[in-house]
Length: 177
Image (cartoon, rainbow, N blue to C red):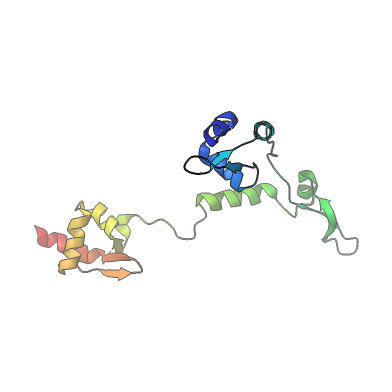
């Protein structure tokens, strides 16, 4: 069976078939062809591999990595028992780890709600990027860049981006009219 036939048989693209060969999941034999070697695949091996691909993979919705703890008799502090995994009700029963708060904190951090920098409206900023100056004035990006390059609008490069003082931008716009 050649590459195209093997890919069609398994139900994948030729490139995916080539990746399976590179990963060592499928073996291939190259035989001499008229102009170049041709790949030949074993039909029985492809059948077993196709059966593997069609096996449903079941992953748990939640995998607990919490560690079970017990209060120490002397101090009342929590102690780790090696080799044990805590169940949700065991951990929350001690009150040490509030799982819901921890998860909500992670979700907020991922969504960006816990950023340390507050969002400031463009109208209240003292330094503006070119995109913000464009949004505030309605002038095109190219027009603002040309004004900066000609020296008519004062700007400074901070890092990789340009910043324009709001007062300088207002003066430049006043000179336009």
